[in-house]
Amino acid sequence: QRLMADAAEQRFDVVLVYHTSRFARNQAEARRYKALLRDRLGIRVVSVTQPIGDDPSDPSFFLAESIHEMFDEYYSVSLSFWTRTGLREKARQGHLVGSLPWGYVRDRDSGLAVPDAERAELVRALFERYATGQESDRSLAEWLNARGARTAKNRPFGKDTVREMLVNAAYCGYVCGRRSKDRAVRGLHEPLVDEELFDRVQEIRAWRTRVLKPGRPSEDYLLRKLLY
Image: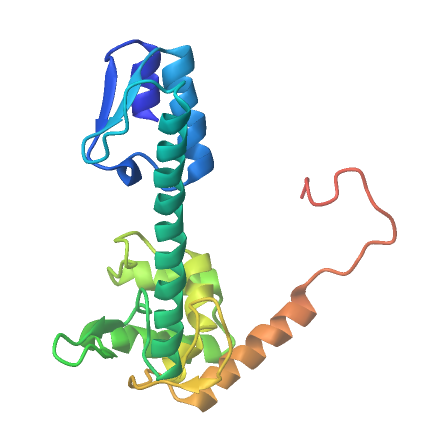
């Protein structure tokens, strides 16, 4: 976007890239931005490693560039497919993949997720405090912040982050997505909470959803959900 803004101010005459994939890996985007640069602004787009001529109106130029752009997008789609396939297979084998849940670190030798000594204790306490029925996501976020804890992005905890932690079955030893409650595959990592405690927390959450969720009013007021 900075490049297009500078192009509109005529700050340069040529966009020079090492390879067409460095300009874009989406054929539709590549065509759109190149059309803006060439047709409206008179700026050339040149690939160092793929010389295909200088005349965009030449049919052979159009064909060669289109083939390069198509293969760039194919590589991106193919890479994404095989990456997802690899991650699914690792998860099937019991590995936590992607960003680890807060409270775990990755062992350098084995590559497995292992408890972080300090944070793991806070995770256990988080579940235990919620299981008393006297805490909420918001109050637990304040409790964590008061102890100097910070999220993986070094930010203060909020109620949404706490909610995601409390429904993450990875903490009781399963492999699942960060936002998933599924317990289909037993993980190779050490659980931070036992399954009984995890289930008790889920029961309390389910009960609160049923009891505290307001029912439908007798009529739809104009400012319903807007004014409290």
